[in-house]
Length: 295
Image (cartoon, rainbow, N blue to C red; front, side, top):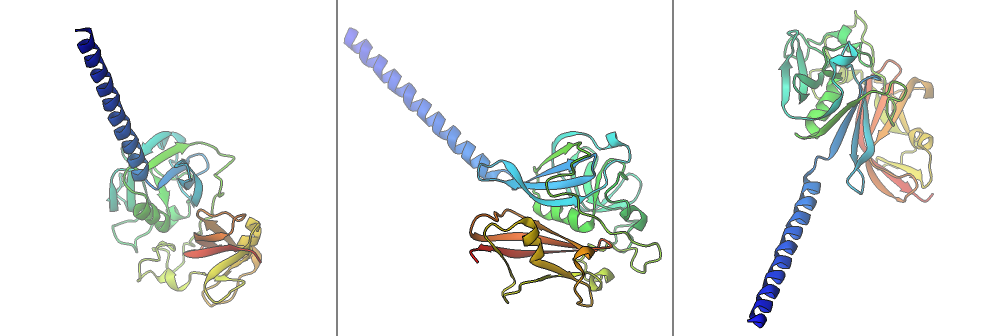
């Protein structure tokens, strides 16, 4: 009888270990699966600085790699845009707003607060409210986070449902990539009812006036080449900006931003997104290849 009880005890113990191993294995597989399925980006809104920075995951799965910065307009009263941690939910190509204007490429992240373009008078791209566009980079909204059409479309296209949005305050430090400038549209400009960045619209007349990126050391393959150990200044010097007539701007007349995951101290090829902004804020963005090589 003792031997039988001992045998039963052993069977139960082995069974428990087997069940525990299955549970652990399933938990591990679910954790790995959850990590693989988590959104690619995280969005951080610096409410006090009116700047949005998008982060990508590092090799450990943490959102520590800044890839894109955007000027924005948060609530005209600071607390109109709530602080906290939220996530994106609903997506609208056009969305009617509380003041009867429309926002293009709208993405909800908490209650009635959304990312969206600067207001339009209707759901048509040639009805932009230029004076509101000129407020980008300063408080202006009823609580939503206003962006250029190009930046709101980037979030709409690239940040899937469930993307984490963190709203915080740090007026002195807009973010690791700085705060890009947004152009101003004069009240008598013939294109004032169009967003200058909304270049996916073929009929947008600004398309003919936008600057163009070019490589200052062009090897004929469209790749940005820099030596291993190059500085950010050397990287930006490898890219220039021309006006619509094809003439290069002087060095003080434009800004260059290189966004993406890359390491200037490690040999390799990296896909980056380059933004060029001229002196009056006209912007062009382009995906390019960056090669960090021994030279």
